[in-house]
Length: 195
Image (cartoon, rainbow, N blue to C red; front, side, top):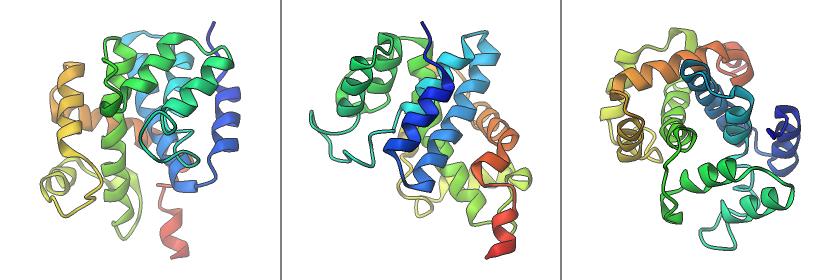
């Protein structure tokens, strides 16, 4: 049985106070859900997985059995979440050693890092509006290793490869998915007016 997205969202917001981390999970949800529609998969199940992939990170940021994502997955298992969701969440972190075998797991991994680069690229724009963000501009940011240093470019490449999608086609797809959720992600330019 697929857990409800509303329940997953509530859990994510209870465990995560950081607005930027919440928006990261919402950005990953936007991209993963768009892929679910593209592939004809269970959109709610994929959305739940994306929403919860980092929900324990703020409380348990350290790596290891007592940290992210192990603590969150153990909690979700106690709550009766399905194993395919838990395996995908474990697989999004290379250090767990959990293989990404399902399409869901591969999609989550492929969408995770790139949403960070896209968000960073939008936030340095004067208009802070993702509607005006282009793939051409993202290519420049992607090549600039000093920009958004926390985004592992190799993970982005590997994610697209594992998913079987050309890198820039994948990035364009994720950008479009995030553009569709601009207001939810706080990337609709309204922040520029308050800065």
